[in-house]
Amino acid sequence: MPGRLLRGLRGWWRRYRYRFVPWVALNISHNPRTLRYVPAELEDKVVPDAEVLGTLLAVFRALFANALPRQRDVLAALPEPVRSKYQDLLSAQPPGAPVLGLTPQDVLYRTLGFSVARAASSLAAAGRGVFVAAGRAPRGAVVGMYPGTVYQKYEPIFFQSIGNPFIFRCLDGVLIDGNDKGISKVVYRSCNGRDRLGPLRMSDSTWLTSEIQNPLAVGQYVNNCSSDRPANVCYQEFDVPAGFPVELKQYLPNTTYSCAQQRPLRCVVLVALRDIRQGEELFSNYYTIVS
Image (cartoon, rainbow, N blue to C red; front, side, top):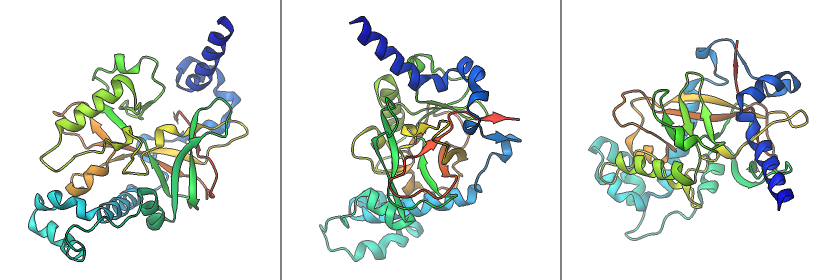
């Protein structure tokens, strides 16, 4: 029993140590490939925000169109100018017709030329990881999103953070809790339900389940790089603009802890640092150095 407990503690430490600030400070020079030097906060962009927005809109619109017969209540709640954009697609479907039949991964592949999926990591004792499941992700492509509840620096997250290796810290101190279990899951579901306006969902909660509707919402399972597995993706912060189409917000895998704040919704995307072929696992850096 003591030996099993010790092995369990060692496994937990291997997974958690990259989040432990003292360990990072002591070992930062031993693994320079995990560093991402950022000259200034506003310059922390691998690709322009406009490109990120364009990718998300393309994927979300394709997902919406693929499930259009199930979106009738959503369409009815939209203003006429917006609703009319989808009328031709909807009228082409006979009453009661099933959805187009594509899986979210298929939609992603048809839209961007690649798809990503969770699977057992190629790293020993690393649990699950994220792979390019089909196609090729070109350099600069958005290959994932980091889902979870968004907390401002002053908002309570102590109990959610205990034993939680899925809390991502943004450059400005904003935190994203990407844990899909325990109290983190309960908090996200509560905030997701709180913000719903009739048939209009302001965020996606399916990443908490096995039936993920946004196939990009797997970023919390991307493993850290190492000396022999250099990073092929990096994190990039993205604030959702005010004019984001309301019918597509159902695919945003983030929600704010507080409903009172007026700030744009913070998202974090993962961007390919090089071309990534089918079958390759994604590796990122768990921390950023601002110089």
